[in-house]
Image (cartoon, rainbow, N blue to C red; front, side, top):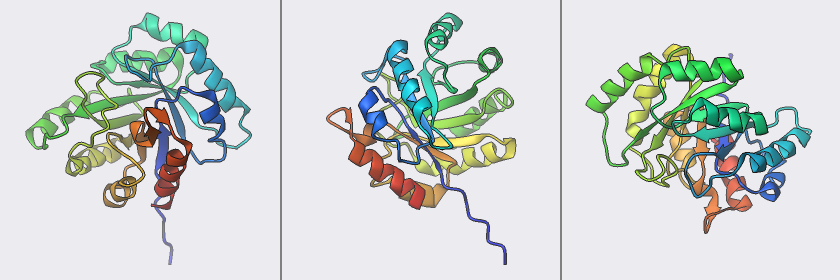
Length: 232
């Protein structure tokens, strides 16, 4: 009997700023490292991101994590400024970027493009999801992944709160039908990520504040998070 095991969910650790923390992650099966160029307390300058990329390029593991830059409604000039300093593997867009802009980014820099869609933490789905799905249809062929996150009025994402997870299957079905990867973010931490994966089986999970202590990335929490994702 052939049993096909579901591949482990991909892990994205977002909001990295510190070179030493990244070096301490070298033996962890992390798939994406996120650096934030949008307004955020985790925002870094392109030169610092380039230092992090140097660390990643020195990793001898076969599949080094992909460096992902997080932006909110960037201009082409802003992207050009960052990409001149550090070659990102993924450009993640958290604003109201149009399908045409996503396609332009993909063509111009030959990167993967992730598009985030955020939900208020207490909002249930139904009509709101119908509207979002119609919007999503226009992004097919212009993005590689969608990322579901909890809306934060100040910073758009990185709220530390979960949204209504029962909304996930609607988007997971849409993503499967279009061959697009589905990531889930928003309020994830070592204590709840296994429940998410076992219940909803997203292709990947994205964490930032859930692996921090007093606003600083905590290698013990990062390790616990990654282990629980891969075990799930």
